[in-house]
Amino acid sequence: MSSENQLSLFDESTFNQPDNQQNLIPTSAKIPIPSGTYANMTELAEHCNQCHRCGLGDNRTHAVVGRGNLKAPIMVVGEAPGQNEDETGLPFVGKSGQLLEKILASVNLNTEHDVYIANINKCRPPDNRVPTTDEMAACLPYLLEQIRLVDPKIILLTGATAVKGLTGDKRGITKIRGQWLEWQGRLCMPIFHPSYLLRNPSRESGSPKWLMWQDIQAVRAKYDEIQNSR
Ligand code: URA
Image (cartoon, helix red, strand yellow):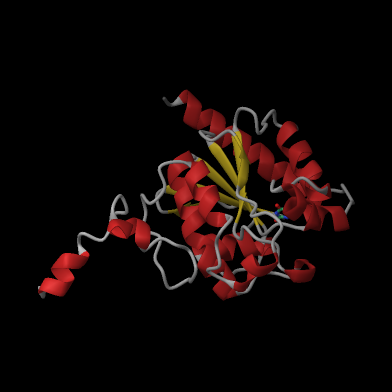
């Protein structure tokens, strides 16, 4: 090492800043966010609110990280914030969110005790468009960290974007909803996105709402089975 470089080790700006902290400033998707980066959700949320790993950070009011029990056994993963979520900084607080809460409540699940809610993307896409593959990939490390911190037994993936964003599975949601997937040792259930149910209000046998009722009951049954086997 040259004496110039050795001397730079005495530079005060590097004190108290381990190398990995310097590398973590989330300005580009090229900067890795390794597993174990965040000690808690507050630290993670601070980074999300400064994040420019993709262009969605340019227009956000708030990054939308999550809400619910930070140690929940069930995690719901949505797509991306809409206007209400961008304004409040909380996921699923608009009409879709109200329906999601009702679906969970129908089998006695709630965000106070059993459920934590997050999204594939933390920032609102313009005009609520579907996030691009690059945007999803840029944001994925945050979700992986959230999953590590919450450590849910069951993950509900709402809609094809959530399935693709987390697992890479590109199959349509109609094809795979209701079927348990194993992803990195965790049980995942793809379900319809609540906004799809808002557009398809029929409750007839075989309708999207009816299928959701089957799926959420299967989730409840699996959750009970896991609890009873402990
Ligand atoms: N839709 C989503 O997928 N996520 C939200 O947070 C709100 C609506």
